[in-house]
Length: 170
Image 1 (cartoon, rainbow, N blue to C red):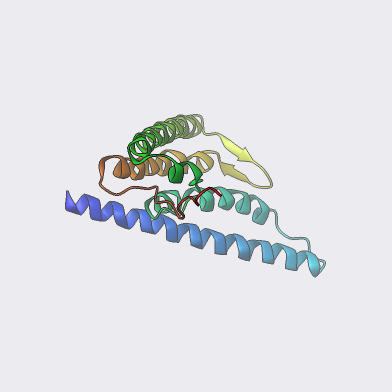
Image 2 (cartoon, rainbow, N blue to C red):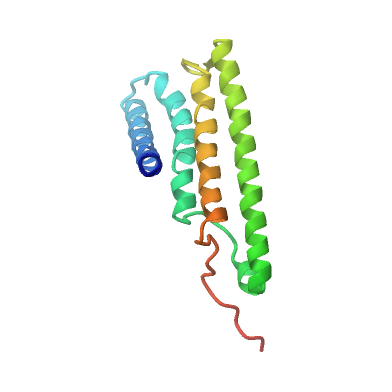
């Protein structure tokens, strides 16, 4: 079990690194295209289409890492003002809701990717790419995000640590 957990931890980190590589690649492709245009050379069609895919990848791939490291955005106004007992109930409700939504997205992404593969669908933009490339990250990443929320649900660590305490009323 420790080997599986270690491999999963490596995968979470690898996806975050891969997202960073995708950002850099998108940057290079954009600079390449703009530079060619600036020189009066008509750029090839692939950079725009590739950047569109990369935008999706670098938004999705680091999601499990961000949940694990609490690097997401949440509003702590409720967390700070709610009594500890109710806070824990709301926290569990939040985890369960997030797990359910993530698993739903994973399932829908799986269905879309499976259909795209089964029917050999092509995404026709400036270049033709297999449509499953658009949907493939969804089942993988959203399942991993659900796992990360489950770690908070069943673990001892809390996701919601208030940044500030409420100020006394004047």
